[in-house]
Length: 241
Image (cartoon, rainbow, N blue to C red; front, side, top):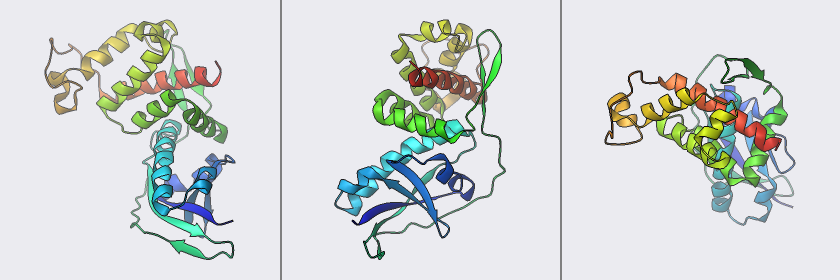
């Protein structure tokens, strides 16, 4: 039976880890002669390269979000052509996009979760099964897919959207604090900063300030760390309800 493949492009640093990180029967990445390909059982029912590209892009959004959570330095991948492999091995390439690579240094794949009481622990995300479990959750639960989708964008507005998704899912911001995922003061400072154009300029969630800017605006790195911790804790509960 002919097989559809979606060729991937991105930094070698990111691509080379994916075959070991994503090995689900229904969704996997393989390497062949220096090129990386996304395989999916969902491609089997599709009839055109356009359909494969569209479905593949949806998968890539989820992969980028999950991989960025797995390793904060992950820069993202994209599609680089649709390929139809015939039964005799002949390949039909439907389009090609130029690949651009940069060099980055590697960092450890781990996340330190900080509880509201100040205690810390390292969430062991160095195992490939975690990336796969997040993607499976995303395919089953739209809220998880949405959270990973926005987390990959790496902006104040996208971080706030992740916060809103988690807040709505758990029953309010107070519940995030009650569960020990973040302190109320940190959440309030995050919200106040994110909504203040005086503090963030065009990066703010609102175009017009409705009150005074925060006395101590939260830095983007602080906000990212806060929301990453909240997102990680939330995913743990989604995986182990």
